Image (cartoon, rainbow, N blue to C red; front, side, top):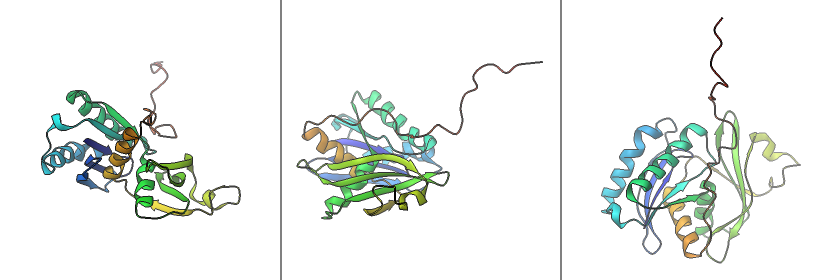
Length: 210
């Protein structure tokens, strides 16, 4: 059983079991209050699912793509919770959760997942269905682009069915993590997918005083 956390869009927390599915899931689409709500959502999700921390086998963390400020809150929360609980962190590409939901509904077409990157940009990933383990087959991405560029002739995925998403389901994210483990596959890279520099950077050195 996993606790799953994603803050690449809004904030979503879920309890997931490979056999039981999504046991509990809570979230908000607010993209400005990740840090304020994440602790409460984790506590309420555990309470709603009547699950003790000791019952968990790990924590699934959405690694993005997502804006720096929001995404790092969820990843930090997952790592700190896992450290305190003595459980491993299972990184998952957040777009894979959207693709998993899409294909689990019975869809079979190739898919372009698109989420808001702010600054008048979007994140995108291309998919070609589910593999034998029920995991999304990502053929390209994640990438960062201007929305109009996804329609241009030189964008190779412009003809794919498009899914514009404003939120990521932590339940779907957790199921991807469970299926990955069950198939004996390696987890995603443990590096956040910011895909661009943060808005605020450190000064290269002390300010010069004249």
